[in-house]
Image (cartoon, rainbow, N blue to C red; front, side):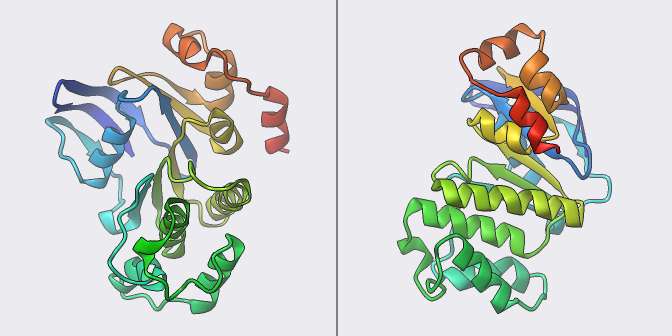
Length: 235
């Protein structure tokens, strides 16, 4: 995917991206302060917003192969199970009840298939959103702080699922998180946003540990990141 001369104004905020390449088969991390344009970009890619100028080259991707999860996921007025299988049903794919049950059990939600999805806690709703995204095997997945309210065991479970799915299916992930350790554990490439612009884009190690860009160094200051832990991730 390539983003070229993209501009979008939302109120007083303006997102301006001259050129950004989202390499296929990689896990991409978007970092930067609140209001720097990360979620706006995801909404543009998803088609929720339309650009004022410029364009996105999807390079063969269609919208049925893209999904997005958010910190406050939208859930249907239906059961947990029906929410999870919804993307499968609209694509004419038969749900695998056993697999969905295994997902729910692995993240501490066994037996909640028939519960009203909107009656769940915020963390449980995020789990449903993640399972819904994983179960239909999209080619491009965007995660906007979806793991932020989860317990440590569930975060570890979904991190492993993301890495495993990318390895097996070769899909592309785009991840927003204010947890830089989370970004370091998962991402191949990192893109740093500052006041509506991408000020650095490159390999995760280079951006997180060796950046010479003032805005990036300012954003990362005070964060305790272990480059040795990054090395162990890739062993």
